[in-house]
Length: 333
Length: 244
Image 1 (cartoon, rainbow over the protein chains, first blue to last red):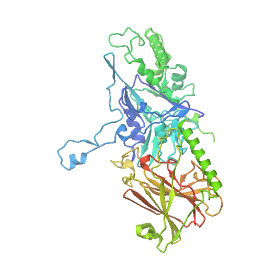
Image 2 (image 1 turned 180 degrees about the vertical axis):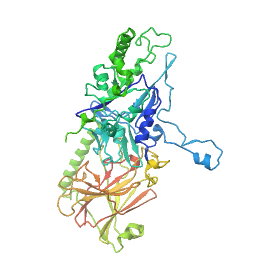
Image 3 (image 1 turned 120 degrees about the horizontal axis):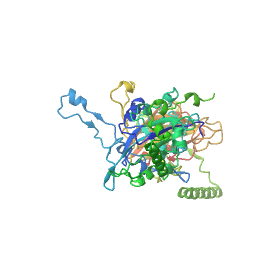
Image 4 (image 1 turned 30 degrees about the vertical axis):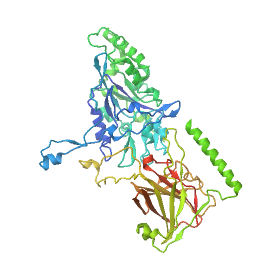
C-alpha cells in the first residue's frame, strides 16, 4: 500500500475530443524510436471500437482473485504509425497526392463521432484514457521479472526499463490495455503519470494542456485536493470498469446524460439520451447513484442555490483543478 | 483448475518414474553424460567454419521437456520440439557447443538499424513493426563456479547457494550473457559472447562459444519456439548433462 496516491478525475461532460492531451503527451514522452504507434494518453469515442480496437472486450484484470486471460492486441488493432510521402511529391516530382503509408486502418479515435443509436436518436461522448495507476494492478502481478512497481511515495505505477525483458504478460493482464510494447528497445512502456513533472510541482502535461479544463489532479488522501472532494466527498466520480478488480485511480464524472430532444422538462433518469445500460457497462451500477447526485446538484443551482460540487467541476483556474504536492510525497530518507 | 490437475498428474508421473528408476538401479536422469571432443580445429573454425568442422564430432540427442503452464492465463502448448542434438568440442582453450533442432517456423527478423543520433533530432523515427511476435532462441546454462560443488544447481535458473551463468542466444536480438540465482532472478550482464547461427531446411544450427568448462561440469539446454509465443520460463528445457 502506497503512503499517498496521486489520482486524476476527468469530467466527461467537458471533453471536446480535441486530442490536445494526446499530443501533449506524445510530444513529451513518445516521440522516440519504436513509439510511433503508442499513445499513453488517447481520447476515444464511446460507444465505439476504442484504442486498441475492442480493448474493453478482450480480457485481462481480475476475477475471484485470479488474473484473467487476454490476447495481445495486434498492430492492426492499435493502428500502424504512418508517414507521408513528402519526398516523392515535393522533391521527386511524382504527381500523386501526398498520402500516408501504410494506409491508416485504425488509430486513437478511428471511429470518431460515430457513436450509437438509442431509440432513433444518435448519441456519443468522448472518453480520454491514461494508465489508471491502479491500487491493485494486474500488470504488476503478471510480471515475472518484477519490473513493474507501484511507487510507495505516491502510488504511481511504473515499469523499470532495466528489469523489463519485453515478455508482454503485463499487456495481456491490463484490462485497459494501457501498456505498449516497443519493439526497437524490446521493452514495454506506459504512462508514468508525468512523475518527473509532479516532483517539480508541475501538473501532468495532459492535464496542463487540456483546453476543456476537464482534468483534476491531486492526492486522493489530501482532503484539500479536488480529486479527494470529487471522489470521496461529493461522490460524483467513478472508475472505469470497476468489476475488473484493479481499483483504478483515474475517475470519471459520467456524462450528465441529457434528456432526448424536445423533452427538456423531463429528468435525466426519466428519458436518457444515452442508454443507462451503456453507462452501467462502463462505470458499474453505482453510476445510477452518481446521476441522481449530479441531477440534484444541478437542480440546486437552477433554483438559485449554490452547488459546491458543480462549482468545483467548472474548475475555473489551475489552483482549483490541480493540487500537486511534491513536498507532501517526498521520500523520507 | 485444469492447470492444477495437469500439475498433479505431471508430479505423479515424475514420482512414479523415479521410483521405477530407483528400483532398476539405473543412473538418475539428472546425471547424463555428454562427451566432449578434443578438436584439432581452432575455435574460430568451429564457430564460423560451417558444418564441415563439426562432421567428425559425435552427436548426442538430448530430450527436451516443455515447462508446465507457469501462469493461469497461459495458453496451453504442445511438445513440438522433442529433442535437441548437441555436439561439444574443446578448441583453443574454449568450449564450443553446437545445438541443432528441427523447427518448421523461422521466427526471426532483422530489426531496422537505429541511427546513432538522438530521435528528437530526426524527422523520421524507427517504428515498431509488430508488437505480438516472439523469436526463436536457445541457451546453455552452467554453474557460475564450475567444479566447485558436487551438487548441481537448481534447474530453475540456479539457487541462492548455486548461482548460474546463462549464455542466451536470440534469433533476432543476438547473444547475451546472463546470470541468475533462482527463478525470477535472471539478469543481463551487458556482456555478449561469440555465437553463430544458421537456419536451413527447417533446422536451426546454433554454435555457442563458452569458457573452457572443466570436465564434470553440469550443463543444461533450453530452446524457445517463437511461434509458440515462447519467452521467459515458457520454453523447452533439458535436464542437467555432465561434461565428460
